[in-house]
Image (tube, rainbow, N blue to C red; front, top):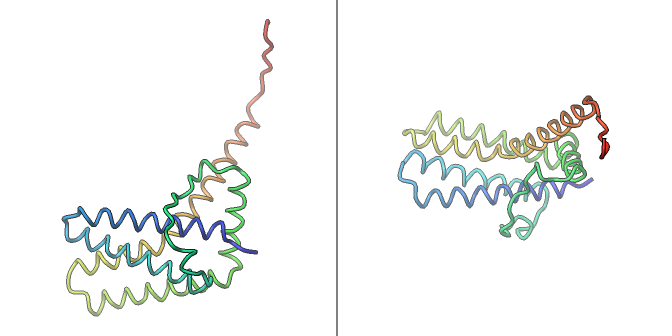
Length: 171
């Protein structure tokens, strides 16, 4: 199985977030916020590089093509089901994804060591936190898909429990 739909959407989301961070960096004046935004950009780039390395993506595949992320609530039930199936496959079976998660764990340890042994200012903390949060963006994406499936399931159950009233015209 392949998870190209899910991975492509994750890459589109990451590229969109990089654009947002860069545009905020152009106008931001707070040193702490600048450090956090810079950390986010570094984290997003690391995540893209881990995806490229583990899934053998070319630069063309991950290049920002100006696409906007999908609006999860607007997906059809079929598209949402495919996305969910691919995410489950990634998390449970994919050795490539396990490699990405291993790199993420190693990065967290490196960030901890950096903070513990060489950080001197709160800027260092802000940068590391931004980087960590950025590398965890996949969890937000995965959770949004799961939440939308749960919401639709609840709606379906609610509709099934409600009695149907047949109204006929002219009564």
